[in-house]
Structure formats: structure tokens, C-alpha cells
Length: 168
Image (tube, rainbow, N blue to C red; front, side, top):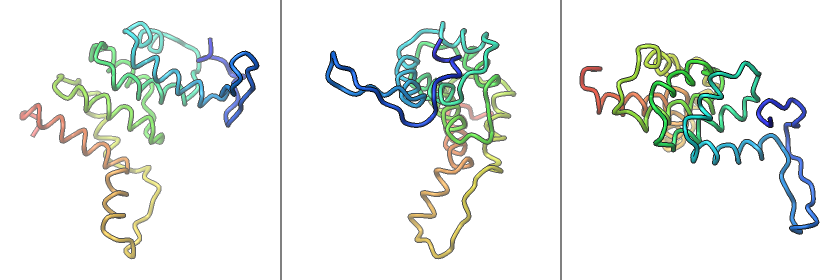
């Protein structure tokens, strides 16, 4: 399977297809973009596979799965929880953003304490690797803060609190 293939090269790689007279992206990132679209349209079987597999899956595919699944309305929150708890990586911004997108889009669901802890850990922002330069204008500072780990988790926390007053 492509997800488990260690031979797929990171970085940009294309090949020419004579039949279609076009170039085909053969990089891990290219396959990951296609996988994101697949996850967006798939049912719970792909989530079951990701939860049950013991193979090491390329991180770009997991990131893409989270982004694609965040747009999918056919997955139960229990499956999402298992997936999040298996693959959460607090040092990976894209993965944290994908997790936050899933929870934001399903903010009316009662999430487990473990998933709420994941959001709290993301919000700690210990991995934000930017420094605030006071010479930056207010718009740049605002953009930087909203796109930080704590910023993406803040949007998720707001969505959860809006749907669950008991979390206040």
C-alpha cells in the first residue's frame, strides 16, 4: 500500500505520462494531497484501517488524513477520538491543526476527557517556534498569534464552549 511504502521519496518528483501528455506528481506530498481528498469522501473504513494498522505510516499521510477527515461528516466521534489519540504529535503543527479542525467541525459532540486534554496540551503552545518582534505591526502580530499552536487550539476551545456551556 502507498501509505506503508517507505520507498516513496519526500520532496518534489514528477514523471512524464506519454498517454495523457502531462506530468504526474510522484512525491509523497502529491500522494498525500490525493489521500486527503480520498479521506474527505470516504466512510469509516479508512479510519478503521488507520486505527488498526501496526505499520508506520508517513507523517504527511496522517496530516492529510486529518485534514480530509475534518471535512467528512460520515465519521463517528468515537472513531475520531481513537484516531486522534493514536496519532497526536504535539510538535507537528499540521497535525495539531488537523485535529483542531476535526474537533471544531464536530464541536456539538461530547468529547472524552482525553481529547479535551489533547486540545489543552496543544493550547500550551510550547512548540510555537516564533518570537514576537515588537517592531511588527499589529496585523502581523495578530496573524502570528492566530496561526500559532495556541491560536488554533483557542478557536477550537471557543467552538466547544459555545456548544457546551458546562465547560465554562
